[in-house]
Image (tube, rainbow, N blue to C red; front, side):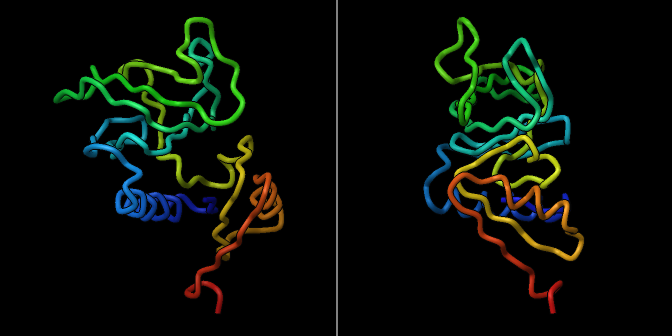
Length: 164
């Protein structure tokens, strides 16, 4: 899901979390983890987006994955170990477990929920299907980027409150 404003992205991610939890896609409890963007809820099965390049781990800014395991959640969260199954075609580093990347949260905190993103952040991302929230702030340049993030299909959604 793509939106122009961060507030819309936060709302979309919150809604997606409820839908995924109700559908049984998220496994186990929610864990509140401290990221670079503040405390956020994560659960096994949740999509995540990497927000910073980390060459040693083979990560690129904007890369997507799915949380496969959360281990060692402690009071401060710094000893928490995350295992993320990377989406799409990725170059696997020597010693990596398939398409999984594992890391301590204290070493890499640049994560965000990966169900929704700003159009700007998604410029390097290609997905099978994209859903775009059209709001009044989207100009033709932003719309062009948003409408070209998909392989198979794109659906544009609008807000009744903003489009009279």
